[in-house]
Every structure is written in structure tokens, then in C-alpha cells.
Length: 213
Ligand code: SF4
Ligand code: SF4
Image (cartoon, rainbow, N blue to C red; front, side, top):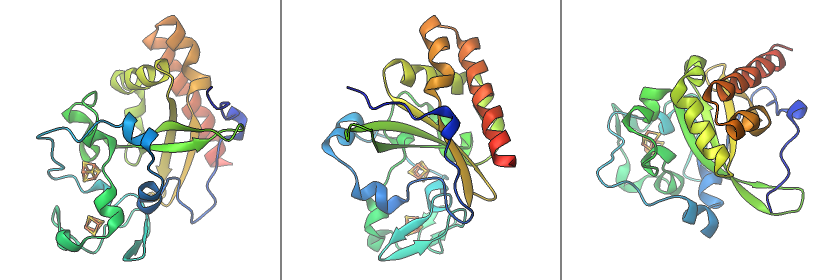
């Protein structure tokens, strides 16, 4: 049984100074068989290349390394980790979903798309943990109005995943997130991409109002 959906009106505003997303270390700690089963193995031949988004955007809380959100790690030189062989465990454990999912083509590489995609476990009111796909928008918010973005949201919603829109602002130091299902479920059921896009725009508008208050 799926966990109840979060109420839309609740949204989830981050307090100043807190970040909107799970840190690398927490992601590493909370991997479970369920999550691992959901993620495919790393896609052969797919490399991070020039992307250093996960060394900049999320905060890192590791006994060996702490850094705030939105600040490039001190060990990132060019697009290379200068301490690669001895990098912290949370860095070793972490790969974004672009490295895992063939569904995401090359254009979804985080530094190219402006979207960092993670999965996380959510605990429902019944105590059960379910998996959610978290779409972190760390650059131009306009990407969420693209057909490709709406298609991705529709695919994951249709197969039963929770999809979380996580808007980052203030150089990634603050964010706002909401579950998209209440906004896009009707469009997904109707098979209408236009309706899904309208639902995403509606969610964005509501979130923007919340951010400004
Ligand atoms: S965000 Fe993904 S693609 Fe970019 S460096 Fe991290 S793991 Fe590699
Ligand atoms: S230690 Fe290396 S892998 Fe970890 S955030 Fe810094 S540059 Fe990236």
C-alpha cells in the first residue's frame, strides 16, 4: 500500500539557512534493499564528464568533510576530485539518478539540464517507507515547463512513484518542495501532456506565492 500523499497546502518551506534536500551523507546512510532494487546499476560508459554539480549544489555532512549548499567543494579542481582515492564515504556512495537511469538521456546530465535528480525514502503515516524521485531545480526554473520535464514527471507518476519538485534559490541555500501528484494525476490519467504541463505550472505558481510570503 502506498503512503498517503502530502497535502498540497502544507508544501514544505525550508527555514532560512537550511537546505531543501537530503545531504549526501544521509542519502548514503539510508540506502536500503528497496532503494537499491529500484535503481539500476550504473549505466556502462556513462561518466560524469565535466559535471561537478553534486560537489557544489548539495550540502555535505560527513565526518571527513563538511560544506554548505551551493559552494563548490574545496577539493574540486577543475572537474576533478583532487582527493579522489581518499574521498569521504558519502562521496563514494553517491551517484545522481542520471548515472543510473537509461530513461534519462545525455541532455539530463545535471550541469546541462539544471536538474539534479535523486531518490529518497519517505515514511508515510502508516510507517511504511516508499521511494520518491526528487527533481532539484538548482538553475533556471524554466526547465520545468519543457515537454521533456513534463514527460518524465508523467512517466514516474504513472508507474506509481512519488515525484517531488524541489525549487532551490538563494544560491541553493534555501528551497521549497512539493509533491506533484496532486497537480498532475488527472493529466496523467487522461494521457494529456498539455494537462500535465498545466498541472506543473499550477504547482510552480502556488510554490512561488509561498516563497514570496
Ligand atoms: S551530479 Fe551526477 S553526473 Fe554530476 S558529478 Fe554528480 S554523480 Fe556525476
Ligand atoms: S571530496 Fe571530491 S567527490 Fe567529494 S565533494 Fe569534494 S570534490 Fe566532490
